Structure formats: C-alpha cells, structure tokens
Image (cartoon, rainbow, N blue to C red; front, side, top):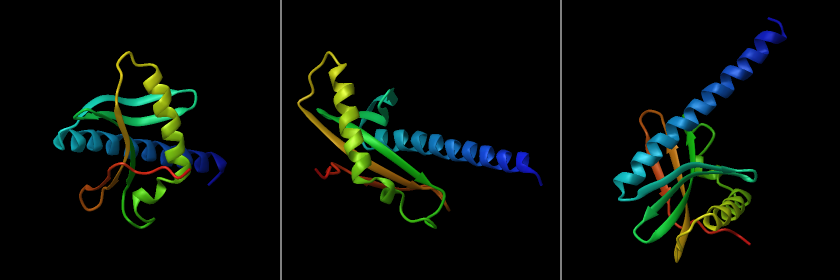
Length: 132
C-alpha cells in the first residue's frame, strides 16, 4: 500500500470523527431539550473558535461543550474538557454575548459527554468551573 492509501485512511478517519461529533451534537441538543432547555444556537463560530451549543435554561444562558466517544476505551469524554478548553469557551461566550441585543443576567458553562456504545449514555455536568 502506498502513501495515497494512508491519506485516504486519515481522511476517512477524519470524516468518521466529524460524523461522530455531529451525531453527538444532534443527540446532545435533543437531550438538552428533553431537560427543558431551549436551543438558541448551534455551532457558533468566530475567528477565535466555536461553541457547540448555546441554550436557555429558564433565565440562564448556557454554553455547552459536547464531547462524544464511541466507547470508554480512551476514557470518559468529559476528560477531554480541560481547563484550557473551558477558558476558551469563557472567552467565546463573552464574544457571543457582546453580539446580542438582549441582556442576560445569568450564564453558565455546561459539559455534556456522550458515549455511543452500546447505546448513547449521557454525562451532563452543569456549571463547570473554569480554573483561573
């Protein structure tokens, strides 16, 4: 097998990973709605990064980081929500809020981990703290 095959594998792997992420975000949005939240925006992007889901939980705006894994073989998906990632979400949430005409008195950051196999299993951590 030549290098072209290797590139196809990497591309195929990347496509599978993106499909897994998209499936996870779809499941996460459904899960959050079942919890009574209203999805305001998905995949908010700006030059500094992306927020997976922005939702409203009562009067609180919630910025949700979604991590999806096929199995627990590489550990819990929530282990991938690092302090650095949370600091980035905090920065991105400020950017999103600055673009809104409405004032939101209460905000929080949640992390939602999903393990797909054998069937979707959800771990929802509310108000994940950002280490300074």
